[in-house]
Image (tube, rainbow, N blue to C red; front, top):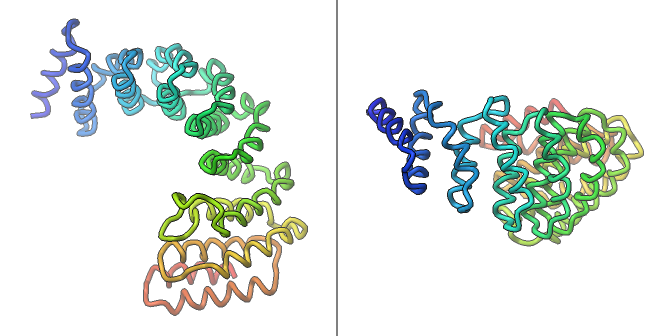
Length: 309
């Protein structure tokens, strides 16, 4: 059945007069061919061509299928660079977002210079969705070519202060990776991370960020991972964290999975930074609660937490 479909698609792609909406359908069928392990390379060029469409739906399908078919080192990547440059300057923010999404997956170190300045400029865009995707794209650039992005690292600090929580939270992954490599340049950000965490646990973020009535738990977890890196063997920095971590423990809800995840991450953070007797005692109590739980999952994280304590 699949081989017959492959032959049908090859015949359809060879027809230069095929309708663009039909071409969209053919490309989506080609995705399934690829997913089932068959060679779909004969249609890759048509996915790249569809990225040039002016129709937003067709363009998004082109970008989606291109990102599924190709990787950053594929020889066809060079053909979409010019299209990406144009779309990053589009007045339609949805077109810009589609381009930024593809950039994060497909742009390699050689093509970053052609797009870097455009992505940096979008950090000041009026739409928060665009700013968030621009931060994520810049993070991907930094992972692939740190030396090229080095002059713009200061922009991550600026975006950490963005008025929109989604943009602010998008910087946390970049900060975590950079701090894991070298925490020293980011020690002065400890008060900022502590302040953000404090605002979250005090329910100052919109309710849309709540999960099972827990305020922005995934942002909390990422910030605590960052604090754990910044507070290692540093008494001064750790002292800034004690109060807010104590508050996270106090407000922790052990009656649901996400609440237990927060407590566990808080225990790991407290045991990673400079020791505080009172907090360690609280960690020991929570660890004992995990070990006594009926759930095997909680028992496992209790054992892991016990090793940290």
